[in-house]
Image 1 (cartoon, rainbow, N blue to C red):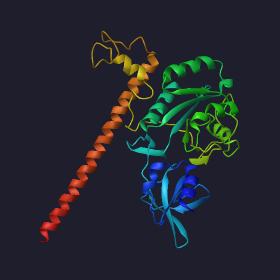
Image 2: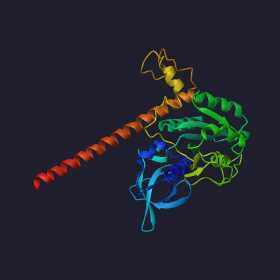
Image 3: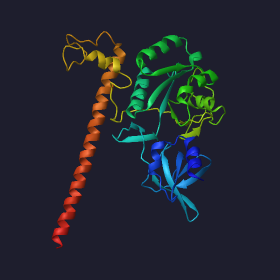
Image 4: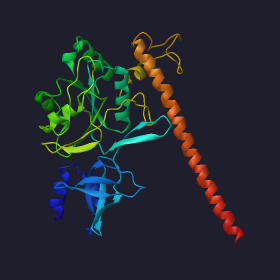
Length: 342
């Protein structure tokens, strides 16, 4: 395949032009996108076909990654991964972080207005998206299962402010697909994030115009889908964009990359600039500009996330320092044995 044809095909699955200088000119390896990862292999898409390729244990390919692959001895194998433009990841209980997807332009943050409605959890998703320099778009579903849908939509709009788009509608409604059109242009990559049973796979099918993802009805009593996505997978949309559906995220810890004033709490940070004291905790201090202007529950969540973020950042710092100390020790041991054997 000639270079213009190759790049044209790759562009249909989101290939960034900035990657072109990184491609070998001799054709020894070819670019393709990781659309799904399995135990020891990946499914790759080169813009015209899907095929399997093995990867080495030291590699960590994710849905959305770009890889260089080659065929040797009848096997296709990933040779290397191209540098990631961004990475969405969440924190884990052990202090490490879990990478989720890579090279994303827009994160569709899906939340039901029914029993799934959790503004505090949405704030975490907003921080997760902003930390990876991904554009968040909030999509609210299941208004028909909620008696106070309009009030909840208004609350989410206040929470998101003017910088984050908030859409709402039935995940099966083609009008919602039209509303998402500005983020679904050629070369764009989207990811669906949210809890189980909020309609992510249903929305994915609506955007695809087909039933590629297994979905199930949700009962008013249980608020749970019978079928849920079990693996992250990248799919091509009709207008030239790509979308990754993901399993529901039950737990969403901060990774340490987040900034509280970016994505979810701009209003609190802005108000805090007018507090009398720089270290104001927005409790009982005199001259506080935040207390009374922000809902108490939301302010409590802000403080909770503030503590969690500080802890995650401290853990990350300690791990970096520990790795640096280990490297210094290894260098010292190598010098010791080298000098001793002279």
